[in-house]
Each structure stands twice: as C-alpha cells, then as structure tokens.
View 1 (cartoon, helix red, strand yellow):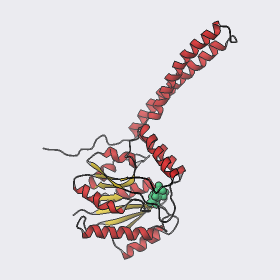
View 2: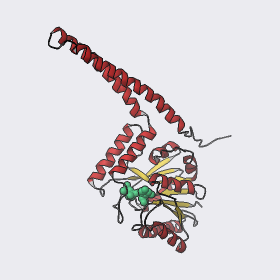
View 3: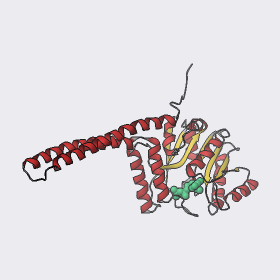
Length: 313
Ligand code: UDP
Ligand code: MG
C-alpha cells in the first residue's frame, strides 16, 4: 500500500500547531482505517527557522505520536524553499505527498479525493479553491490580479491553486531535477507533465496566528514568478522601441507640416524627430541585448528538457 506523507512548512506557527497536529493526525488515521494509504504514512513538519516554540512543539508531538515527524531548517528560507526542502526530503521515503499550509485554510477533507485521483492514475492533483468568500476583499482582488498578471507575462499557473497539491513519488523525483535558484513552485509543477487532475474546495479563514504573506511578500512572489518563468518583460521593451520609431514617423509628418505653416521655432523640427527616432532605436537595442540575456538566463537554469513517462520495448 502507498505511504502518504503530508508536508507542512511552518514559520512561527506555535498558535496554530496544536490544532494542526490534531486535525492532520485524525485525518491520517481515518485514511489508514479506510485502507486508502499505508499505516506507515506520516506527517512531515518543516520548521522554517521559526523564532517561537514551533520546533519544540514538533519535537514534543513526535515523542507522543510517531507518525509526526519534523525537519528543522537551519534558518528562515521562506515558504517556497521550506516546502521544497520537505518535498525533496520526502521523495525517497514516501509514495505520495500532499503539501498543505500549517494554518489549514485548505480543506483537509479533500485528501481522500486527492488520493483516489492518484489511484486513478494521476501523478499530480491540484487543490483548487472554489471561491474566495472568506478572504478579505483586498486579499481577493490582489490575488486575482496576481494570476492575471502572471499569466499575461507567461508564467502559466493553475487558477486559484496555491501550494496545496498531491504529488506522486515520480513527480517529486522529476521535480527535484529543477535545480534553479529562483523557485516558484506553482509555475514549475505544471512543467513536470504526467496526468493531472484538480479537486475543488472552499478556502477557510485562518483560525489562529497571522498571515505571513502580506502584500509586500505577494508582490515579491509575483515578480519572482514572472521573472523566473519568462523573458516576456524584456520582449516588451523591443515592442516599445518599435512603437517609438513608428511615432517618430508621425512626429516627422507633424513637424514638417508645422514647419511649412511656419508655426514653430527653427530647430524644433529636427530636434523633435531625432528625439523620437533615437529613443526608439535605443529601446530596440536595449531590448535586443535583453533577448540575449534572456536566452542566457533560460540556459543557466539547466532545467530538464523532457520527462519520459513510458517506454514500450
Ligand atoms: N511559511 C514558511 N516560511 C515563511 C513564511 C511562511 O514556511 O517564511 C509557511 C507558514 O507557516 C504557512 C505557509 O507557509 O504554513 C503559508 O503562510 P501563510 O498562511 O502565512 O500565508 P497565506 O495563507 O496568508 O498566503
Ligand atoms: Mg494561510
């Protein structure tokens, strides 16, 4: 039977953890009793360099309940890296992983559906939020804009999916080959391939502790996502350059007409045309250099170029 590991990154979650431990342990036992997963399944809590009692709580829980395991990172590296640490650590000791935030805003009742979808042959199952009723309007609007902007700039992500997902062992194996420094999980996971599915749930409010994703961090994540997935922003510079050169033609016509109508000072005509034209040429040049830098950028990532799913000999 398949060993499930539930991977939970935690940063200063002392208020939340007692509740999280209990809910997740109960859920795990329920799934084990139903025969969906192996009795050796476990919870893996990653302490992301917390400053409060998070690690002590994890250690204590591990003494009482063996299915609760802990991994302490040496310092705070942020949610994405903490989760990655957990996924990579678990890839050799489990058959299926489910990642979830410590605040349990994501619905643990869909674990079963996720595992079922895995047994139907899906290697990745995304948890997707139905609505964002419980989030504040501000959080909702910023989050929605986030997805739109990301998709526009070429970082394709699953709409309304955060880092709540099931990944099979082989999906984790392939994921571990993405050795890039700028890590944006939601963008990388869809690149892995394999059969995937979504399960839908309603997102709850945080019951204890505070959100560690203020607007500042959301913006940072957005910029990280865009810049680590596409060179589109650079490409727009070239477009801007062409636009400027095109406008210089319009400026030229306008300046010429003004010149003959004698409505302008001498010298203005040549000046205004040169400004638009040279501005455009400069933008195009910068954009072209950018294109090459973009290529170098994509090369140095050393991403796996493909992932073989099956072979018939
Ligand atoms: N987290 C982490 N390291 C950090 C910040 C957050 O491991 O530096 C964890 C946090 O404990 C939680 C998850 O990442 O389990 C998501 O954080 P949070 O709930 O604060 O974000 P939100 O749901 O508000 O976007
Ligand atoms: Mg949260």
